[in-house]
Amino acid sequence: MRRRSLLPLALVIMSSSAFALDQGEINQLVLVDQTELAKMMVDRVAYLPGGFTVVGGWLEWPATPVVLCVPNTIQAMQVGLQVASPRFAISPDGKRLALWKRVSIGGQDRAELNIVHFESQMVTGVGEPVPITQAMQLAWLSDGTLVYATEDLQRPVGLLYAVDLTGGKPRRLLELHQGQWVDLRPGSAAGEVYAVWGGSTPTTYAVSCQASAGAPRIAGAGVPAPDGTGRTLEVDVTGALIIGLSATEGVIVDRGVRAAAWRPDGQAILYVKDRQVMVTAGSGQSPRQLGDISQAAPDLFLRGCGWSPDGVGIAYWGVAGNTGRAWRASLGLERILARFMFAREAPVKADDRLWVVTKFQKDVMGNIIEPVWNTLKAQFIVARILRTPEGVMAESVNAGSQTGVVDRLSAGPIKSEAQPGHITIGVGGQTSSLWTRTSALQFRPGLQAWLEKTKYAGQPQSLQVERHMLLSVEK
Image (tube, rainbow, N blue to C red):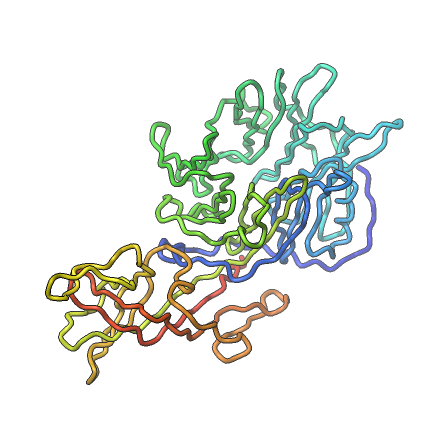
């Protein structure tokens, strides 16, 4: 095993579990900040502990593969500028990263498997260099096994190996003909890898890395839910996002989908369409739009997404011609509180539903029958009523999973973050992050709140928005 000593760097390694969210909180998720990671053709993005992100892709010109760390302050990651492939894998504890370094052997470029050790800031080479091909893939399994796929162009065959991280020879797991490796990812069982073979028809093989294991089996195309419930996640060739409930039953959640990923606890699904970043509960109920890139990047089409290990951050990326862009963002919860004044005789009470609209259908006497539904702006649930000399005040909380409610209701700007009403907290020695913010807004003119199944409508009085950033839960 070869060692290359690099300058030491103090890097705090923190492991965290997924921040628990219930169905109602998933319906309140919003992006509270966004950072651009890279402008290049992106292949994949993954999170490291301590606020770092790794991006693998190709520079626009020349078309050179790179594996970059953002922010670029980890000295050992300079090896990412010398890679033969943009593909990489991170160990389950986040302390190591595997990548393919380009090396010259007898005047020919080959790929050498390298391990970046973040705590010691060492880079080690493992095994013998292999030919550089598009079939090179990497996956680091939850039990610590590192698996790689490569190709023997002379025969030609696709080869799958388990790495001996102590420096010994890799152990061959599988050999296939007439095709090429398309992807590697952890399987549903411990020590199992899903190897996707792109032959005449793409096939996913479930391969055990145990020395005494039997023959590989053919697995379904879906990605198993990480909570062990047996559900699977799949984007089919037509762009349908499918949650498999069993071998014979599934649910189509949305269409026009380009990529999707389970939240680490299996309780939510992140997915992207050409322009939109979406999230839905693990059951597929009530998809919610988190963001739209149409204005920020009108020429870009989203093609990938992923979660941070703690489930409080996301990454998404796309392509625009010969280049692309990638972003990471933090998630927060948005709670909208509103007060509406009703007539004294209005039968409004707690748990009633209010529909905020601009127009109504009325009978010949001028009484409200129901709203003109295409003018609907938001819905609220009454939390408390306050009786006043002027009428009945309904204190309400927004309901439903639609985004953009604040923009539809408010005509005034949110208060400056420099004013009272927000809290900042420093986490793990990092710079303080915005944790919660409360803002008062002005209602747009012409809005009214219809009390469901009645003839009464309330007048808007006050509008308040609370946004809470999700903070990681450390083990």
